[in-house]
Image (cartoon, rainbow, N blue to C red; front, side, top):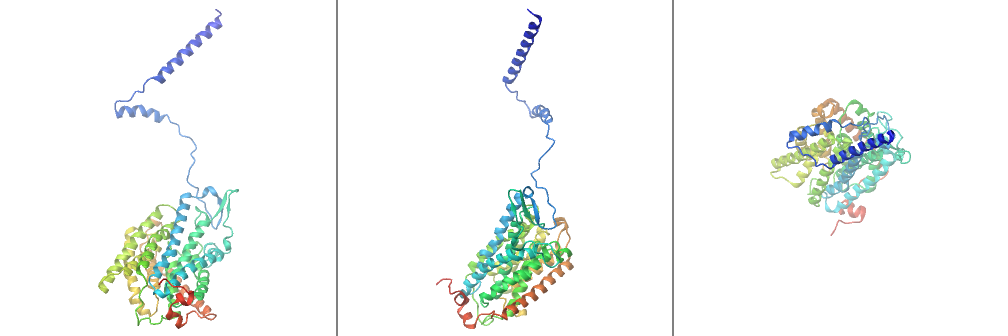
Length: 479
């Protein structure tokens, strides 16, 4: 046999033998280690031999640093944060529709329930259009320390470019689409004037209300929101802390409500005859919706689905519970019995007071804030109300104004650097409270005077006697 052929046959036999050996190994039964230690000994070399890839693709969006609203790549948006912000937007809108409508509607007399609810619905629609046109741009674009610019008038620039792979974000919330952030802030712009309704119920013309709220949302609410929440605002630059609206929403609404009560004067029969609430069951349902919706109000203001949002949710709930219990205790001592209306008012007082502090304080501090607010707001709705001699019909100043002041000042006292990375200052908070109170009171009075010079703000005596449901809307709440 030729030598070359003999070598090839030998190599072929060797390959066949090797393949057979490998096949027998593959078919052999797996040997199970008798002990855990033996299993670890067997497994260890296998783990050690794993080679990790040199490049790891992160699922976390890269932070975007902006100084004004602008376009970013769609991949920079955080999906979890966006989903939470959209949920929070729905929760805060729920606080107004139907929360405030039920809360206030149950407390007024039967003849004016429709009017109160119509005011709330109309405010939601009107303010939405004003926010779309000018309010958002004034509040949340950089321009100067007092007013925002014109970059976002009519929501221009809130772009979504599918083909280009870009979309607009706010410099305040670069991890979510700007359309979501603008809608979230819109719900705050809606609920603030809706709160004011409680101060002038049963005596303000519907047309005058529309004029006042429309102008107020642009000339009062939007500038104050810019001062406090836009980084270039003068109160924000000073270091005023307002996590979710203690001054922007509650002090602002409370002071404006008090000015409206003074300007309109008391209802006919105020202080001489009982004004029986229509249905406190509706009020309780509204208070429940406010409590639930407030999680979006405060935890949503973290603008992220993170630990700060979780803590804000927890302290919100604790403060609401403490406010309800302390108001009930105060009422029980003074009036010798607790009331459903007192419990509902107390929980709202606790929610109001924790609002500016929600992202800055510990749960124990929240308990203290809620307890103090419940007692102080009970006094605000009773003793202080008599001292002020104003027919603030549903205690907008006594609960929201006083609660906002208490919460804002206690934020300066209790803000934890461990929680938020910032320190509070009572002096700075006091400046913020005073500035919002003065501007809100002055501008509200000017607007009321201006509108009254063109149309009569208050309904006639006959209309007030028969009720605004019939006089203003030709509707009744039922039989």
